[in-house]
Length: 390
Image (cartoon, rainbow, N blue to C red; front, top):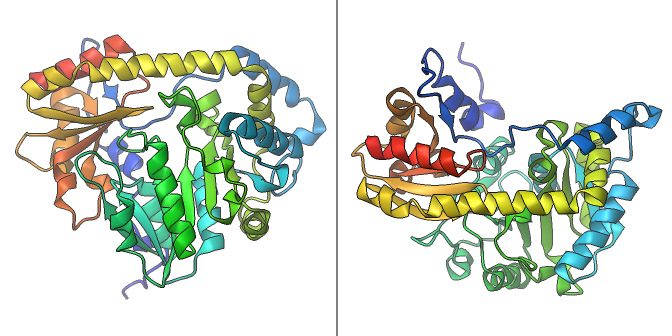
């Protein structure tokens, strides 16, 4: 008997997990250890003072209990205050919700905005988990191809809008390309969405590592920002809380009331310990986080400095930013074949562009993503050494 299609069978296997299977059975000698640039996740624990604060929190009974569905009021209020200062706008506690990571923030938002058969526009290369969620919920992901600069075009997006379109999603700094979207481009998408009655979802998971010193956009300065904007955020990168699953949604109270239904059903509340840690980090780790940003920007500069050496070996560096670099390779085979081969030939684990593109878009076959954030400058040079040696 043939099994009936299920929600999960509508999409592909998790790319990061698939890539990890490529290293199974492969030995990496001490003189050439595996260089893993497949995932943008901190590999170090949170800073020691934060770990100590978390240990103290574990002694409190309320840490182990259910919390408010939309998050701890103190954390929501702190986000509202800090975001208002950073972006130069007015954000209220009632416009903030806490989720179990940014992926859940996306899922909750789309559950509140879409029904089966609706459409959401995703610039490509897209973040694969966004595509996977749309697949599993019966929502059509409409690809908005980006050109050589990897910036989405609002005029091109306008031609893709139908009566089933519900939202446009932007990720900036971008995953997978690293590209930072200019403020005027983000504003143009806001204007398009407002004019067409859509929501603009802006995923700013990597905003703490933006190269600009000021606000990355001015959308919150609009007094009516919450009629269109949904901002998503993650504390995973800022404070190394990946395993504690703490993210945020900033949008209208009316939309959060719908999102609350999803949250209560799926998670009841975000993990209490992660929320306590995020608040403590916001209150105490400003200087530390500024140092983390400087280090990431230093690694970004090291990656950019390798552009010529990569080019001489047939690799084109398209963009670099936050945690990611995006490359084209000239090996004469699809990146889907090259990526697992790199594990064996070079001891390098990275993801092929085919994981970030529709099957129908052949450009992904020549592209690769490098999540370089866990490599220092010497490690980046070593990575390029191996790619050049091919």
